[in-house]
Length: 176
Image 1 (spheres, helix red, strand yellow):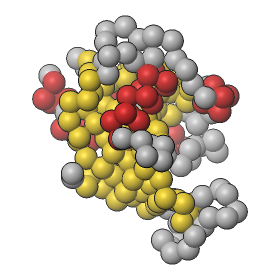
Image 2 (cartoon, rainbow, N blue to C red):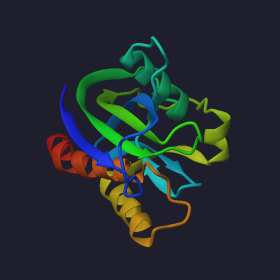
Image 3 (cartoon, rainbow, N blue to C red):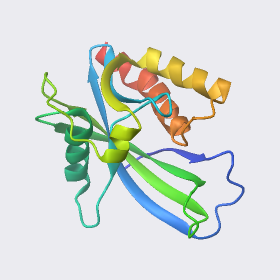
Image 4 (cartoon, one colour):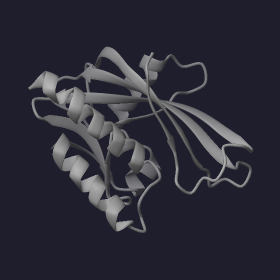
């Protein structure tokens, strides 16, 4: 397994304290010059599909479940573990000082047609929708949101933009 990067949120002053530890699996699904992403209206950003790994759940099982729920992907084929990213950021729950999230990224293939999504209520409320978009368009969009420091900007935008840039440099060349 390869460490891709360590991100420390700019508002975080220390990595000490009461820490919520989370693990996530996220999919990189490329098709020609497009990538399957989630656009979230609330945060006005693009992100890779995926999410938390349940207690005792195998990582690729969690990945397939998340891709199916969030994007409607079918016949998910996990091709390779691309790497993982360590992230430290403030946490909103009063019983924690920070969150330490390890996100594992996997290159995947999915069936040509997407089925209906089965999103959780908060994902629906946030206006989350699966989209096929060019990597460069998604990167540019997220960068502009960060430059403008939009009030609704989510905490994961740095992670997502970092990964889009890495995918653009390393994976889009291979698939071209």
